[in-house]
Amino acid sequence: MSRIGRKPISLPKGVEINVSDTNYVKVKGPKGALEQQLPPEIAIEQDGGVLTITRPSDDQRVRALHGLTRSLLANMVTGVTDGYQRVLEISGVGFRASREGKNIILQVGFSHPIRVVPPDGVTFEVLDRKSANEPQQVIIRGINKQTVGEEAAKLRGLRPPEPYKGYGIRFQGEKVRRKAGKTGKTK
Image 1 (cartoon, rainbow, N blue to C red):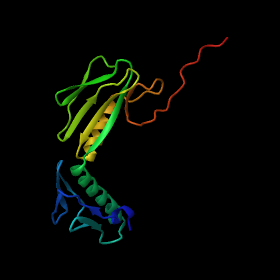
Image 2: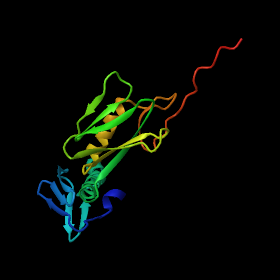
Image 3: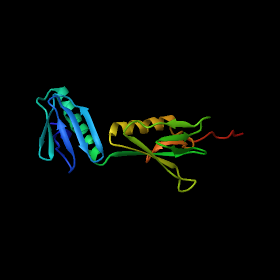
Image 4: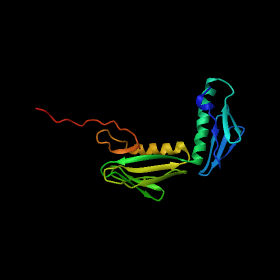
């Protein structure tokens, strides 16, 4: 059995879940509502405040979907109760971010500023730098783990950190492998 698939999911107070016959799942919570079509081969059973996921056979495809279904359901429950966030750090001379309504404007070494519009369910927050040496932080928040991660990856992809001075946009805590620069000509 899948170790992840066997773990039950406990539903916190204020979370409602509806599962149709075809495994179309709707989850409502204090932060919002999510819905997703899950594989119909997997059985989702609700007993009070606990969800259990079972599989009908040990076929390889069904075994693979067992843990995936449990993870997707757990992510939906966590999203509507706590939400998700990713923190990006912007470092470099003249690199900065600012908010304009819901959008953010990035100045990251191009000849023009880049305006990023958040998709539905995602919000951006820009924190000011505490000192000139610290990187500026951009926080991406939302209830859907996948869209929050995709937006963070898109922003990082605009100017990934370069290996010589470390300038660019990186995830918080990301280690950038640094390279040594050119050495002078020796006589």
